[in-house]
Image 1 (cartoon, one colour):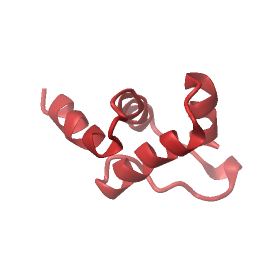
Image 2 (cartoon, one colour):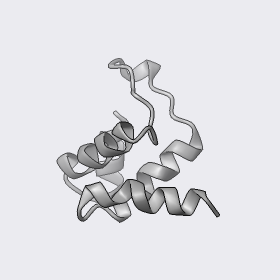
Image 3 (cartoon, helix red, strand yellow):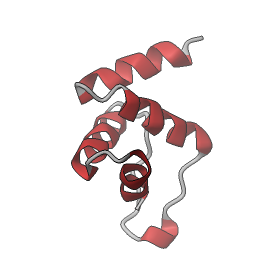
Length: 73
């Protein structure tokens, strides 16, 4: 649901947003979400990481590096 909402808000394809979220999860920068929409809760900090990751999505593998640099400041 969060991926779908982000895709709808940004106008990006769902696959792009899902790819960024996957890369962020692999780098422990985004939580693993439960399958049920009602149980999905993401802290503001993690949503900000997803938003920034989507902004720097080309290629998606670059997003975590950028976010790590931002988080150090």
